[in-house]
Image (cartoon, rainbow, N blue to C red; front, side):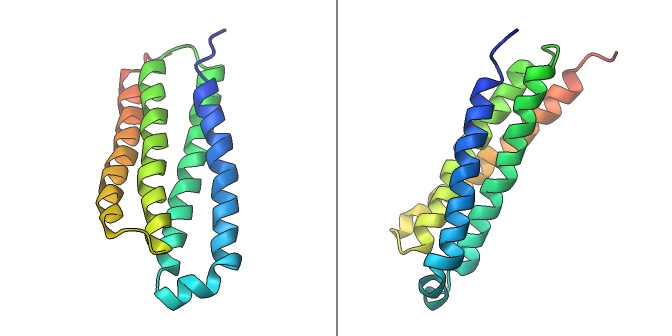
Length: 132
């Protein structure tokens, strides 16, 4: 059996743990700071997108572990794109929310495009799949 599922599974574990921790930290430890600076919604958006794409990574890992190899390369690219997208999109929003340099906002749309690209790879994997 192939080990193609390991990268998305590891990424899901890391991003999932970090997403829960950062979401809780934003809601509790940084609550007054984020409210004072008007960036609570930015932090919440970062956590939401991180956790949603973490679940998608987990789904890809499960598919690759159980799958028959159809669409494997495309699904691995989806996982790579989502991972890069989480780092760039959510990461830039987290940093911007706590007062990071303004240029970080230019990384956010690049991360968003990476997240979208991951979903396009899922579509191409589905369209390239052989029917049973």
